[in-house]
Length: 65
Image (cartoon, rainbow, N blue to C red):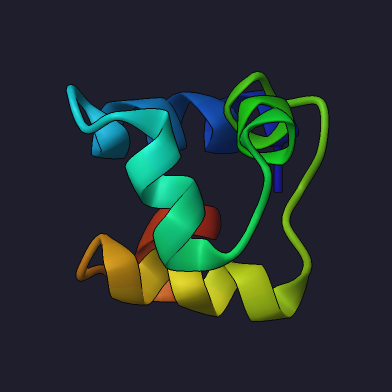
């Protein structure tokens, strides 16, 4: 699991959706989302599940493919 690749994938999934909207849905701060998207941090399992649900993808598709 490469943090930089995951970050890039998360940025692509978010597209033009405002970061604050994603943060509200997930219950995380904007700085936390930014760290995920920059590949500086990998989300814990609970947040991985929330991201997958939010983007209508599987955890496998986002984090392991």
